[in-house]
Image (cartoon, rainbow, N blue to C red; front, side, top):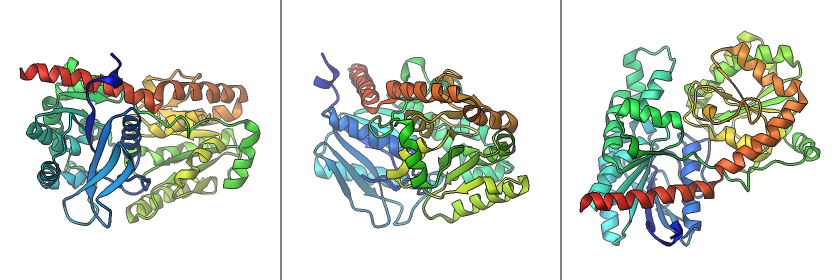
Length: 430
């Protein structure tokens, strides 16, 4: 029988940190790829006939509900006060969230078939909720504390790192979530291997399902139309685009260190750096450090700083630039690179992440180690130096992204896992 005709029908999704909304303010603190992931997946579940409550934290002046369609709503539960709380500190308030959500569920007589949680803060809460409601719990980590801790490459002392990121508590609670939940959906094969190696996860308790992207929104256009986009957004033929939130792991400093090599090979090249959010003092401080590094390396005039790309312009920025760069020190997946590839833009990605294991070098994308700036800068230059290579990467990259990462297909794979795990869980209770 088709998975759409049976099994899990009412889904409680939980994603706690950041600004989760029907129209998310991407670029705000803790509001990036994960928010896109949960929203797009929830939309596809609803299109496939599932009823979905996507639960998040209510703070500032947000409403209790965003009604997205007849099958999907965002439901905000207040806890931890009215102010924004960064994800590293969210777990100080998880107990209040669990209490408040369970009270609201029981007051409204809502019933769910499954809890599907995202990131460890929601996973910790979701496990307690699933146990109270006696329903199945499936979890997607998005990133792993042990991997992030090992990959930070920071000058912080262990005490400073613990104060900033609270890895000890995070890893301990991650372990309990992964051990106690019914199933884990990892986004990459390397992540699944780390779950088994570092968190003792059983082989039969993890399945890999990659993230998806909106294949209708992110798509290539004719070369003849790209010039008009460049004029509209003040972009040039040899621009490299990087974008994302301001964070050490994103490796923007490593990318700037690669610019002298790129400019030596392609003197007209520039970096378009769309880094940070709309208004963040922390982002401003990080960007100031990057600008200082650019001055020291003599490449300041080769960088165009764009603090924020409006969501409606994002696909056009991908299309209008020559190369997309993902220079992360570590990257659980890298949805922005998939979106860029889907738009037909050649991508140079980091070797320190899950996407690296999925692409064919020279066919769908290029990759390099951003810790070796000459290597990374050379890879950025290749599509500009060799038009045939750029064309190959454009066509095959878009085909690869569309065929493997469309959201409807990802949603169907996830529903099949939900149904299988729910059946297994009910058998374990007999």
